[in-house]
Image 1 (cartoon, rainbow, N blue to C red):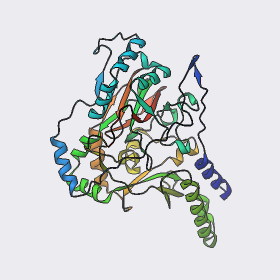
Image 2 (tube, helix red, strand yellow):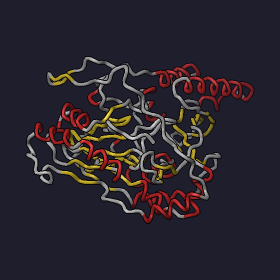
Image 3 (cartoon, helix red, strand yellow):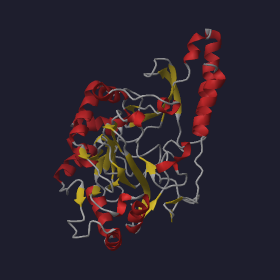
Image 4 (cartoon, rainbow, N blue to C red):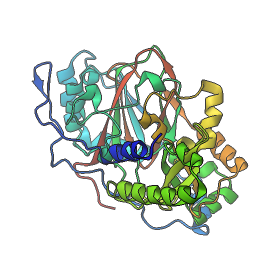
Length: 410
């Protein structure tokens, strides 16, 4: 591969832009599209730092705290609503919006099952509007990495990893945040369930925090964690260059790529050379700044796990690939979208540490087999989410929220 092709591939990916379209219609019903004024995902609320001394007291108090059902299950029958009447259901949500917002914050997630209202995109949008939720752009907005549902530019509803090429790729448990930005909440909806598998997965970050060993939780709190957010595996050609030429060319590529990426994101990315686990050739790995792995909830003050090691660790991904098979790389973006996890000082997590986190997180996963019209409304700070492998055709969507009507400030 020539240098010009590799550089062009990188810059094309980094500079891609999402252009909203405010004139979207479907089934002759106007949809409330995302406008130019729709805000970015809000800045992550890290709160006061949890250190290696305070973390053990917080873990002890969290274990003693009473917790409700997770997730909370709500059905039309339990509410004595007509399961076929979208109008009746919509009116109910308008009248009880504050109650369900509080349920989301206190319990972490609410599963609405069997509602006619949310079977269409229009009904889903009217549902979260009735609850007073305020949409925001996808955290990956600046690089257009997540398509909108049905490919409609400007839609506030995004695809929830439905690609056939990723059906055997288990989406590990994570909170939704990119660099410095994290949606405050999210609503995941099922428009069509996969024939087999494809369950939506949730886990309570409070319970994960409570179950981690004292030594590991102290180490995480003291050192922090650092993500690699992408890999650029386009540089195998460098290995064939004479050493006199290879070093300055590699230095130029690293600097140009760093500039291109940092011009598109609002957090500092550092690029490091390494070997790709995709084809074992030279690649550039983009690492975000160090972040805490345990934070305090912006409203309730509860401590919780806020660390995406389960989804981001390359070791844990390979472990799952031995069970489900490897992801099929059908485009350049699939190769780019590779992540990994390190301590804040760039040290590797040990195999024993990764196994402990993997076991605890896996044991806390709730598998939700969603049907058409089901919605899971979740607090993005308390609740981790993921997706099981599947067969067949799957169509799930997600809307992200900056907040909601009457949301308390931290």
